[in-house]
Length: 315
Image (cartoon, rainbow, N blue to C red; front, side):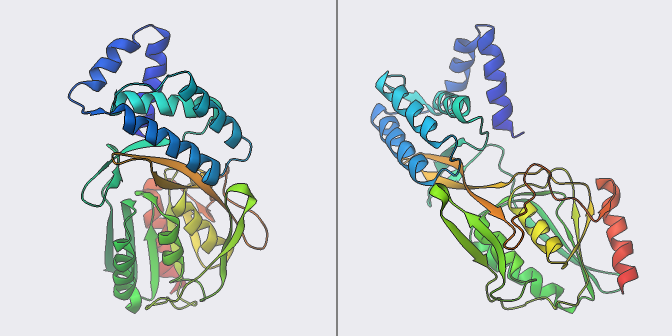
């Protein structure tokens, strides 16, 4: 559960005790007010993107109707602090959809990127270990497109290895295009990686793309997981496992089957929401709910040493 979701849960508890006004005032302190015009414009945009892109067929129309009703009742009239609007909108969206993927973000920076207080700075760490075993650790959140170039650099560094261990235990969130690019280093160009289902039952295959430094198909590959691996990195681990391209070592992953996107609502606001579901292109299977089940199950703190032992044996 993210920090933002913990705050939202706390709000629900305090609301039951009649303490919500004090908390709302505390959250609003020192925050700039969003004008009524921007809030109304953001709501109109939110209704539009939910109608067009929200993946949940069973909840889409009810979500749209609830947002329209809230506007008609004047629940979002007047200026709002960001904290107050975040609590209001996320509470509304969760009440009808039971979907915790919805998160309102403040847009900041010259590029207007969505930022969250609990976003983790991303890093890629590479090493060449004994026996020419290449090591790649993914830490934090990787969203920006520049990470494709960083992945290419990491793969170029690992090109001389005899086996590769990829450590996802501290990986955060990522985007679907970045996951597609990552997988393209291990899968033949043009091979289907997944069948992607979008809103209104639109379906399209996701294919491996050409990359500069593809990894040889006979190079042993091991992926280390934990219960905190989620979303796009689950897609990576699941796809390589199903293709018999990698051995998964560690603990089952979290089981988030929906991919999320960030939609701009206004000058200062963006909304994260689920927009796609991925399934194996042949079997239709996915890691949703069950997570990616490791081939070799072991505690997360021991998984790295076990993966290194398996890589050494494979050589």
